[in-house]
Length: 112
Image 1 (cartoon, rainbow, N blue to C red):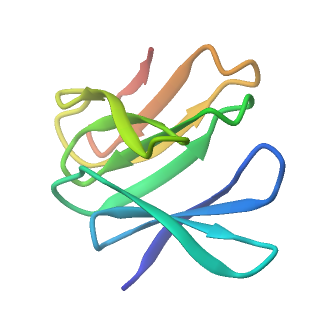
Image 2: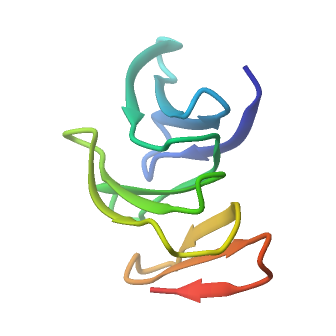
């Protein structure tokens, strides 16, 4: 399964991967084992980023959505299913973790 994006946790101990199986996987880098998965996208997950406080992830997908995840519970806490009119290729938190920017095939940058 292709891995589309990688992001480290704020402390560098966990690696998050976004892939075509509609999941974000979390790997413990000390032991190199899968420690959990985040599911909720209806198509490929194209990008993932971790907040600076280490509490949340943001993901963008081929399903046109931008999702925010609680890392501890592995639950989606917010989903913008109409963020873009096409695939969301890029998502990123700002340095303070208070804003998210997303970009997609529609050529639009969304800041939320």
